[in-house]
Length: 110
Length: 113
Image (cartoon, rainbow over all chains, first blue to last red; front, side, top):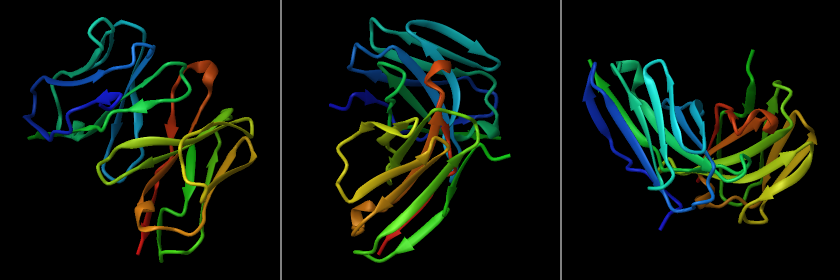
C-alpha cells in the first residue's frame, strides 16, 4: 500500500462546476498537507498549504484536512478551463521530506 | 526573473553515457532538492541539501551523485545511464523557516535510448 493514495482520474467537468479532489494516507505522523498544481510540461506550483487539521480557503479554492480519517480534500468552486491541470497532494511529517500522491488529472470543458 | 532554473530542459542520450543536470535558485533559500517524476506522474524525492550539506538521500542508485557547490546551486550527475532513468527530473528549493513550500524548476526531460 502506498503511503499516499490519489485517484489519477482523469476527472472531466463542465465549466462552472464544483470540483472535489481527494487523497488518503496511512502515516498518522503527517502534519503538513499541501496541494500542488502542475500544468503540462511545467513544474508543480504550490496551491494550498495546511498545517494539521482544519479548513483553509483562498479564493475559489478550499482545502480540508481530516486527520482522524486520514483524508484530505481540495474543492474548486466555479471551475474554469484554466484550472485544467494535474493536482498533486503532498504531505510531510517535518516539513522537509514531502511525500506526493500520484496526481489527479482535471479537465474543465468550456 | 526565474526563481528556480534548470539546464538543460531536454536531454536525449544513449545507454551507458554520463550526463549532468544543473540547477540554480535565486530565492535565497537554504534547502534544495532533486525529485524524479516517472511516466505515471509520480513525484519522488531523491536528495535534499541544506546549506551545501546532504540531509536526505533516498534509496537511489550510486550512479546518481548530487553536488552542491554553494547554497544557490545543486547539480545532479548520472553515470552509466540506463533505460529506467528516463523521467523528468525536477529541482526545487525551500526556506524551511517559512514552512514546507517547495518552489520547483521547469524540469529536465531525460530520455535514455
